[in-house]
Image (cartoon, rainbow, N blue to C red):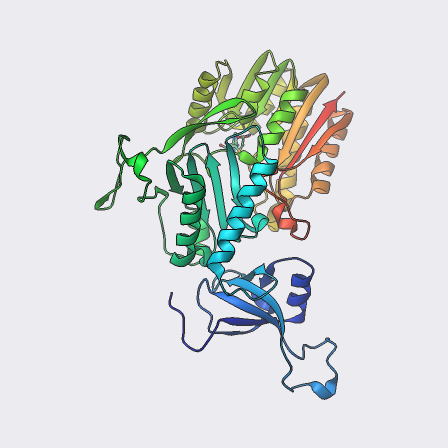
Length: 433
Ligand code: SAH
């Protein structure tokens, strides 16, 4: 990834692309790129609107004449993604490293001010923190990060953000979590999820278990820790698990669920027990269901950490709910938090059908006066779509639902008004009669 000679990387975009940027959306698709000069993978580019754009206000007599370009600002450039440009500032940035440092400081200050009752949170949420392609989660003394764009993957920016995070937070360990699919799509060289070798000195002393990586032996460092959300304790195995370890985006919904829950509770798609452990504080009996044995093993460990007894069942949730309905099982509280069924727009139909089926089965098992906490983390299913799904399930099960709380993702996953893609999680709490 070397910079070509011949000046600063610059991109000219169509009027359509420019209008979108002016309206506050940072993405410009490749189809709106009119011309690019001196670009390379991950370049920080100056973005301008094309001169004499058709449909613009340029008088025909001016066409073809050189006029000053209308500069829109600076952006991260990708040679691979359909999203060719991700705007990072509305002016030309001379010092991208300084920009990244400032944004990290700002992101940390935002969490300090607005995120409470936990030592685990998402510190950097990509576009949500104006740092496209960087996700950083903090679990107590362990940081876990993920790089999703060519620009964030350049050694220059990696060095900047790792140094800044290290200096500000002094973590015991930093782990890079790799999504191989995203790296392939971004045409980035393959990497393995790993503990970063440069560990702070205090950690290297007396730590256990060095793990070999190729020929080089990493310094010993911790890859597991314990963290807290809402007073509930969790174990983290930073090199295992799904996503970046735990579902921090549900933290505020766990709290809400705990408030509304009572009686006998069922947590469907429980993973490592996020909801179940919270429900156990307000319910007499809690059962968690998931198809992943490793997730349930951590869930059991988490129950132990909190001195709780929870029944964990390894099963396919669709089959289990069908059998439970047939068997006449009844609950006072049910949580349904499935994985994203609609990974793209084309999956919307089958995804909606799956969400409906799950909610229908849950509603059939709820006692009158019960509470359903139902979630959907598919961005492509809108809040309205999801309400329609739940309404349809209510019709089919002849239940009356009252919405107690219409919720989204926790505040450490900021949603920006101009970027709908930053909002993906829906969580409805409904009273069922
Ligand atoms: N509620 C959890 C997050 C759930 S993520 C929390 O708050 O932490 C979705 C979970 O669904 C994953 O743990 C995955 O293992 C599980 N899963 C996916 N398909 C499943 C299926 N068909 N049956 C049961 N569990 C499933």
